[in-house]
Amino acid sequence: MVLVVRYAGQSCVKGHHDQGELQEGPEQTSTSPSEAGLKGSKDGEHSTLGTYREDGDDDPHGAEHSIVYCLTSFQGILDAVIVAVEPSVVRLDVGEHQLTGHKVAVKILNRQKIRSLDVVGKIKREIQNLKLFRHPHIIKLYQVISTPTDFFMVMEYVSGGELFDYICKHGRVEEMEARRLFQQILSAVDYCHRHMVVHRDLKPENVLLDAHMNAKIADFGLSNMMSDGEFLRTSCGSPNYAAPEVISGRLYAGPEVDIWSCGVILYALLCGTLPFDDEHVPTLFKKIRGGVFYIPEYLNRSIATLLMHMLQVDPLKRATIKDIREHEWFKQDLPSYLFPEDPSYDANVIDDEAVKEVCEKFECTESEVMNSLYSGDPQDQLAVAYHLIIDNRRIMNQASEFYLASSPPTGSFMDDSAMHIPPGLKPHPERMPPLIADSPKARCPLDALNTTKPKSLAVKKAKWHLGIRSQSKPYDIMAEVYRAMKQLDFEWKVVNAYHLRVRRKNPVTGNYVKMSLQLYLVDNRSYLLDFKSIDDEVMEQRSGSSTPQRSSSTAGLHRPRSSFDSVTAESYSLSGSLTGSLTGSTLSSVTPRLGSHTMDFFEMCASLITTLAR
Image 1 (cartoon, rainbow, N blue to C red):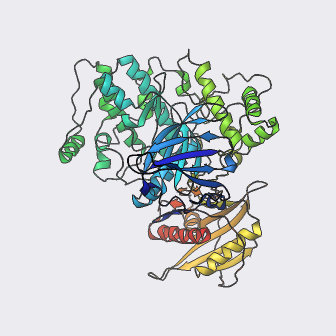
Image 2: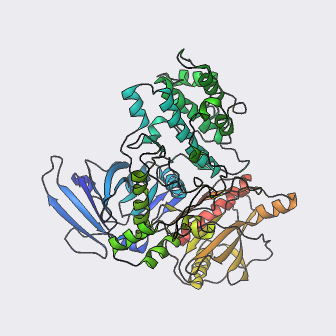
Image 3: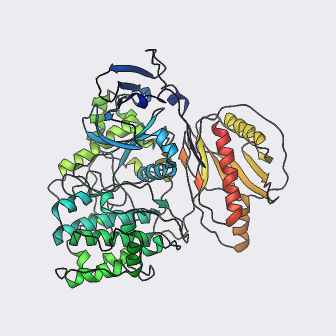
């Protein structure tokens, strides 16, 4: 792949020739060896993967410089030319797949500004969540590309702009059209909630429209993974769309704040204005806490009751998605694909024609394409091309139907009882067992892992764990673990060659923090180093119940989450140091659940992962 990135101005060139590791507080991303090779030479020398050249001095703001990154591991995928006066935090431009010719949106994130503005976590969450989702009304993330100076998020392209701009230009939307858009938005929100994600920043600016006026939810930067029974206390989102409990700093479970925001969006669609608005922020907050808003006379009683139910100040009295779905106004002309009867079942098929088209474009065999799809690697060039072809074909094939979204209805939008599978088609790799489908082999520092999606009908509560995935040899992985533990003065006991019980003494409290490290074989090429807090598991055993935990991870190489057996620590040793290589890793974040001990466990994991990444 060749990425041509043009920056105007001499100051923009600085920093483009170093590897630029991304480190910000408790979150860290480091470039892999292949990415480090992208560093170019101003003198025209060719490095391993990149070159640098000057295009001349024709820009009024200074010399214009072009940096050409030839990413050999992504050959022929994308050609994106981005022009900007200065490297802002986020730029967005349109790219084109070189072989298929399909347009994509390219979101460019400057590493230096990311570090300085403390938005590392926001970007990681957006990438993590978008990689998990396949929904016709959620913007799809195809690929994440890393260079020494920027991250490129290759996303689904929609040409209709923001819903906010549409409302500003055209005013309030007709009732039928407003209902159609609201049904699509609520379906996407329901999909997020069923997959344990709260958006927390829903607003018309984050709802995009495609060429056929279908809604697409975007910008998952403030979203959060949630566990059953867990309460959040983070103020997120824009004030005009934020729920009372959010602006008040009270605890909230998560889904109810999205319902409030959906109510504000519905009001904006129907009325062309916001229910709560004031230039003076304290006055705005007072209006939101009061929950009193004007209902125009032209709104029928059915809509008014729905709005009042969604904009209830008390979150316990606020409408749920189930309540909204059962409302008479919402049920009118509701497409069946938006809310399938069995949301726990996801199914799709591999399109043989698309596979053949990929083979023709890339001059490869069908078996190579199939291996790429079944590998579960979202960064694989053949898989990316396949999904681009599928998504854009859907637009053409279904343009005459109500469902006109540019992402295929994968996930929970194909009912197996109603789906006809033509001869020769095979089960889609996205619905293979979770170990395959939800453990992508990430290639970029900010790439987040797919987690096993919790089924809404499952009795057991969702549980999230922390781990690192690698394709290095198991002995090399463990050697690096020993090296890091010795450097950190950890104490450990060897259970077996791939299972350790580790502890560290808190210098402040004097208490020991204990955890289990175990290496698992994920598939024939990957290994998982799993982290587990021992004390948490002991507490669960004593209480006779299992309390859900949650962690989110991003991968410099390959890191999924996995569950593992509980262990108890007995004796420890502080000895031994081996040498090996574990390719750069990133810091994973976990939400504290059991007070100071959980935070100590988090810090212990953070220090170990940071040391492994060096």
